[in-house]
Length: 432
Image 1 (cartoon, rainbow, N blue to C red):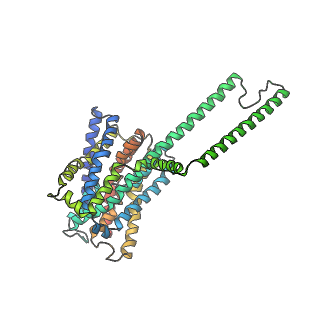
Image 2: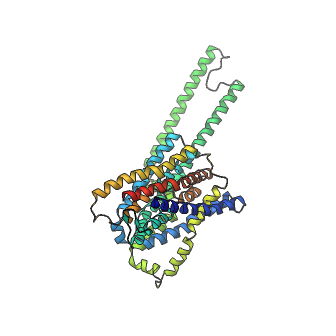
Image 3: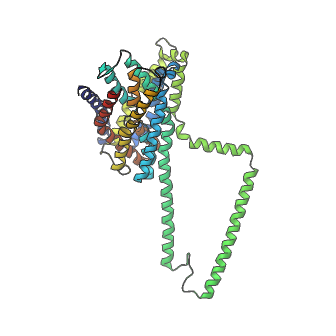
């Protein structure tokens, strides 16, 4: 009971920090210091400067070739957790009939969990206790857990900023297409109704005409239809001939441009910062130049670290500003919020417990680290609420209404986290 109580207190403190910092954003929004436009600009600045600095520093400091060899299971676990969340999320939005504008954001929120801020607090508290039940954490467990967190976060971050923006924009695109189709249908209906009001024969022969006139009209209409079909056929044939005559280089260039446009959201500063951080970590000379106090480039890394310190607070402040009037359920109704919460805090953790039981028996002691901190990281990383960066992504790539929906998802997950996350961590400690 004392262990569960300690973990519950740690979870509450971690969540309380989020609510206190988010309260600053809520206060600023209510006092008129932040409005919707300024929050959006703030999110773009964070995504272009602050967060890339955080990713670069965190990955450059923790990733090395030796570490990557030893912790291969954690990057694979990140991929599995993302895939599980995405599959469950897609099934959820289809079953609930979630509005198209929010589908991509809901799936991304189900797929990507908080991989740094909350796990660091939870794991540090558990590991710092030393002996917890039948599990004993050594003196090096704290440093080891940071390495394990870095290995997991590396994979999740790259995938988050590669796939996440695509999902965010996909929902907005679908909504725009459906809105355009609805608008066209409304226009066609209005034209038809206007024609009926005027007595025009839009699609039918007027009943006021004679049979002979109707027959002549039908023949004329058929002739016109054949002429239009022939014209369209000649037009398509001419277009096909023109396409065949085009140079192969032009066709390839057009396809490349289309591919780049489709992958545009994935080509962002955060992916570049993640890749650069990994490169620095695995190249000893660069690592020494940037992270050694006597290194030639240490001042650059030091500046990046100062900027990086503001990344997470800014994201939470933006979240708080979005919730200034409480969670809004225009796009994200109660069922969707409860479903995503269940996926993140119940569904994925349950799968990971099953995987843990299988892997621990199947893998030899030389295949993965023997430290209990490794398996604790494996389990906790799959049991966290939606990543706060989803709020940043939807502000950058989604619509304002979708941002309100993501804020609602985060609100209810963090409200449930002290109970559900505490129960999950207690279960993890019991089976280690």
